[in-house]
Image 1 (tube, helix red, strand yellow):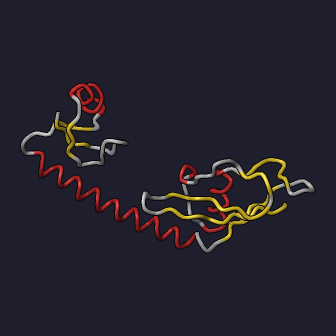
Image 2 (image 1 turned 90 degrees about the vertical axis):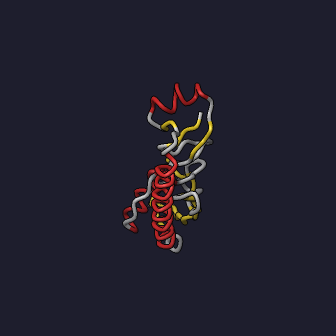
Length: 148
């Protein structure tokens, strides 16, 4: 069945894409959830308009992400934490702590899910945290955990 996607679906396509999918997948999931509509004869122009709007929004989002990256990359975000004698933290610094420190020190709000901190920071020192704000914009922010 030919469908036009109304929203981005992982491993299938983005909004406005015309795809050929199994009839059951379309009837039982995509159409009832509102993720797609059946591609008729006059839907090509509507799909093109959806793709154009998606491309404009994507360019705007990418530009905003690049602006945030330019502001955050040169900064060093300092996070005070309690630590023992060897520099090992009593707790840990999580992505929520990093986001709170970024907002406090730079005024830029990030979504904690955009930080790719593999495991919480458990020691004093300088650490780099990868951030992916957009599919094309990925950068690292420098975090310095200092003794409080």
